[in-house]
Length: 163
Image (cartoon, rainbow, N blue to C red; front, side, top):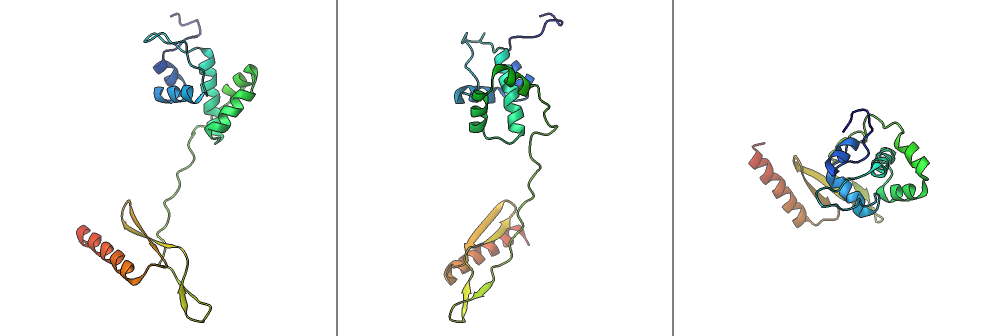
């Protein structure tokens, strides 16, 4: 292939690399109907300019945080010229949203005065982080036996970790 001529056909891996997605993603988009299926020629199957333009447009719409169903509707609505214009739009430097900080460990639930003046447990759950990546959610309305079981689990994990 000449370096002065623009490429007009790509193998699956070449197309995926040109757009920054995996070959599996390209196949998934074909399956979902976001991309037309290429003419099948076995191992010699190639993708054309339309595939490249649509993939670039999909990436731009993903950068705008549209779900795939909305992207599919948008692609169907756009004319070929509008689709090409969208594909040539600037992508942000990072397509992923900023990382979400981990949820803080919630303090134990507070008791709320009940209608008769006594204490009633607040509705909901307490979230206990037992170990990194392991949480226990304990209902505020759990009985004493269940609470004791949860405390025992927490003590066993602390003992196993040598805390």
